[in-house]
Amino acid sequence: MKDVYQISDLSSREKLDAGTDKPARLAVIGHPVSHSLSPAMHQAALDAHGKNMRYIRLEVEPGQVATAVKLMQNLDFIGCNVTVPHKFEVMDCCDELSEDARAMGAVNTLIFGEQTLGHNTDALGLVRAIREDFSIDLADLKVMIVGVGGGAGRAVATQCARIGCSKMWLVNRTLEKAEDLMGELQNLGNELHHLEGPGERFTAIAPDDPTIIEAAGNAELIINATSLGLRSIDRKPLPAECIQPHHLVYDMIYNPAQTTLLGHAKSVGARTANGLSMLLHQGVLAYECWFPGDTPVEDMKKGLLSSL
Image (cartoon, rainbow, N blue to C red; front, side, top):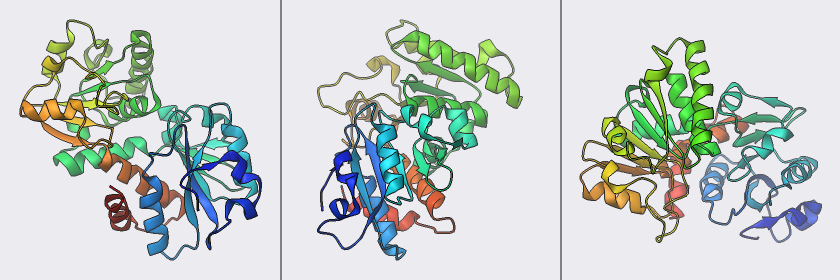
């Protein structure tokens, strides 16, 4: 059994399942995907619930998502998870989008059938993670989200708007992307009747803007949705002065367990958590899409922790 599969491995069942006694019927697709811990937690749940199948990593280059989806469907896959950078491209493969996927403008879970359904479990996964890690509801916090130009950051920002966070700072290196998202969230807020004043609830700001330190001081929760921190040489996604003792700091990166941002936050007395809890809960929600009625939380948690 391979650690990472390629699109060429989907040419036939014989090739895909060679050397194994269980057929691959679920996958996570991404580029790169070798670091993904999703197989460990999903396989633990599949085994615990008596499902005779494998969950695999599938390396898919940009532009090849539709091909991969078609080949998986031909081989009777149940569905797949979608990680960076494919959460936008995969939307074109969907016959139908769930309400969450439409709201987030991104898909991280596919359910195959007569129709291909695109869903997004990232945002609700984060809600559960924040409650678990900090014992507080996300809706009750003023939130600064760093990196709203990508699928994960956009999903988080949209969810915060949907559940009624009273104040949000949308931070992005390309300010225009943050401003575009702010406009969308203002419209969403108006539709949901959460908004007291468009200019009061949302602020778009660049990480190098001199006013960001003051803005961060007014936030209660800071979420890093950028990839900065994956490498030890990466700079912090925000100026160090932004992090203060009263903050809750959540880094969506889970490997390494302590990024430069989280290390600095701990050093100044802030409470911190990494993206492992979000990975778990978004995975649980995806599993429940494929197998309604199963309750896989503890099994998936054991699988995830055993892989670290």
